Length: 103
Image (tube, rainbow, N blue to C red):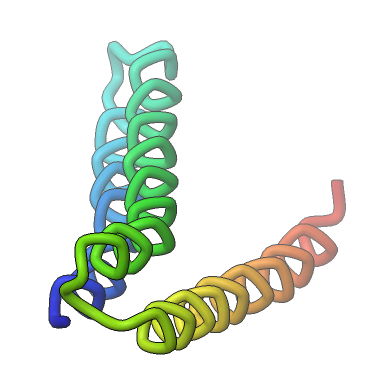
């Protein structure tokens, strides 16, 4: 079903939105940075919730008989492939940025 696809599209949004909000609040003159850490943590929590939901939702749909078990297996495998490639992409480019800082 399209609920699983919608979940794949919505998963990176909380992290991106909260990261943008944290950078906006940390640029304020009166900010000590504590608010930005909380906002980033909220974004990570919501992203983690959506990742878990993306893996669990096909199981719930298969258990209720809306989709078949092979469809559930393909949806979970596709989700793990998508999330795994995003994590590998992120790890590759974060390493590149940290090595170039010179700290």
